Structures are given as structure tokens and as C-alpha cells.
Length: 231
Image (tube, rainbow, N blue to C red; front, side):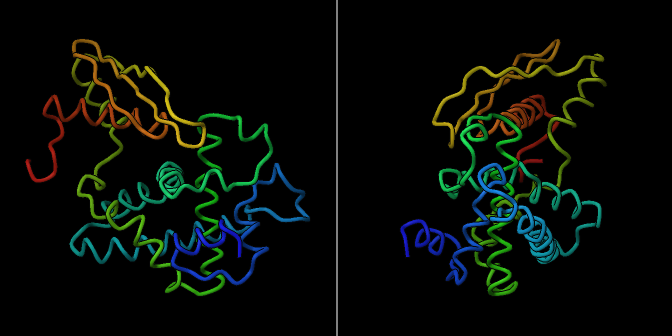
């Protein structure tokens, strides 16, 4: 068993049985032919397994929530952005096999690859051990995110856009101020400007995460949103 294999078992709490399947889960199609295998079919399955277990988790944590609130929470927890953040937190990007051209990409496409690998890894665990084998990994990385009260809100960027229109008909403008860190673990600092209001900045592991953070911070600063427990 190599070091990467041992790390993934420690990360997920699962003893992997099929080395080829695990390798496929970490391989982008740009690096191998379809005949050799990649994560695409596994990602398809893992997406559904993740959705089921997160739905189950939300129903347990929020027994009085409406279907609409549960849907908002679910979408925020299983979307590509959240899965990519978890991939980075779990230090998976350096393990992903992809072409040099693909690794040099920035932005949404690369983050989608990170998200796909997380879902493919979930599929491997499910195929080898079923739902109970997957739950420890899901609980480790999603449970605290699922419990956040603010996760039931709409996306902060959407909320800010609609609020800004109501205030003076303007639109928020986002700008990247700085990008630091290595390619596999970047940090973006983003500023949002809105006519008639002071700018607001935030940092995140992706451009969109930083934009969302800046929008949320501005909404809280202006009293549109409140910190959980302070409303």
C-alpha cells in the first residue's frame, strides 16, 4: 500500500479493496483514454449517493424545516463549489491525475474537476461498502456545514443583487484584489462595490467563494442579514 492509499484510507475511514477503481476516481479524462478509465461514471454515481445522504442528514437536523428550505440547504451542500472546497480542505488536488494543460487552468473548470473527484471517491466507497461505509466521510466534511443556520438562506450574491436593485437600481460589481497561495490551494481576495455604499472585501478558496463572502459581509454590515442568533 502506497502513501497516497494510506492517506485516503485515513481521510475517509474506509479500507479500499479495488486499487484500479480508486485510481480511476482520481483520474481526469484528459490524462487517460476512455478505455483505460477515469472518474466520469463514478462521479455520476457519487453525486446521487451524496445527495441522498445529505438529504437524510438535513431531515434529521431540521425536523421542522419546509421542503423549500431543505432544498435550498441541499443545493448549497452538494453544489460544485462546496465539493471543491472540501476537496481542497482534504488536500486532494495534488493527487488528481490530469494533463498539464488541465492543471494549468484556473477558475470554474478546475474547481469542477476537484468537485467531481470528491463525488467519485464517494462512489468508490459506496460500491465497496454501501451507505454505511460512506457516512463517516460525509459526516466528517459535511456535518458542520449542514448545521449552519445561514445555509437555509438564498445565495448571498443573489440576495445582494436584489437588495441593491431595491435601494437605487444599481448592480454589485466584484473585483479580484489579490490571489495568493499555490495553484492547488489558492486564496482569493475579492472586493464588492455598490453605488452609494462603502466597498466590502472577503477571502475564499475560489473566486466565487470570495465573492459570496463579500456579498454576505455587506448584507450583514448594512443590517439586511444578521449573524445567526442575533436576529
